[in-house]
Length: 387
Image (cartoon, rainbow, N blue to C red; front, side):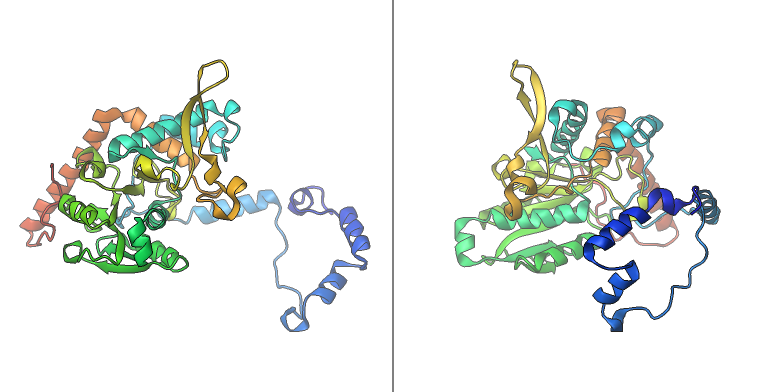
């Protein structure tokens, strides 16, 4: 075999190792093993029609030629996806730095203090913007964060709700479509019934245990949900808010009008669209629910010398300890993207984020006026409100 071949250097096991395995199994060849293992009716009767294998260099040249055919167009999809500018200092020193992008699970806190510091910064940013008491160190995206909120609120139902078997979860019709898809999928195995409607039509009946609202809505309208949340609390119905992270620099924080959970994505904090993901989802809630919150939490503690130290807090929620009763698994977080989003906030600062939000809104107002002058009608009653 050519010593420069991709197969020789990257695909195992080698011929010698194959022979050892075949001898141990008691067959003469891989073909005999396949013949004795795989039923005739699902086995191919002839070889695959494949082109000759390329070398690594030839394949790299080929994919570069394919990539050159791509045409990059402006994206107008909206619906929670927004093009964002990634500052070069973050791109070069975090996204393209193996010290950051090879991070997986920072369990060894003693050698990951810088990484934990960056995630603590991310958690603090989320708490500041949402007005909540506690945030985790990220989830996969907004859809999965919303599904985790639905599950958490189901888990922390009031005793009366559990006794009555309340299993309905209200979903605002303004929820993002990809979020709704995840909610539908995750509701089935845990026995939750979704009711999708306009939040103004909600009955606040006793068979509901929770609700989720989009803030702003999927078409950009901003509603004042304070009255809805207050009425829900009066009926022991807990409320999650799916909020645009940049809008929270201008709008009233959901924590201030009584939300139990706030979720969303930090994609627009400098994270490229990436064909739809992944993007670091955020999850913030009340201190009272800390035992049920999914994902990792970075906490501040002291080492044996009394010095400030960071660690992975509440690890008893994780699969490697709690097995099937865990509220998290080892693939929960988007560490690299969460760090980038947190550093985006550090880079711009409070005033910088507010400036970006104002620029987005002013551009939107300019577009709205231009379209109205052409005869189009603005369907949103409010697309910016200061409470």
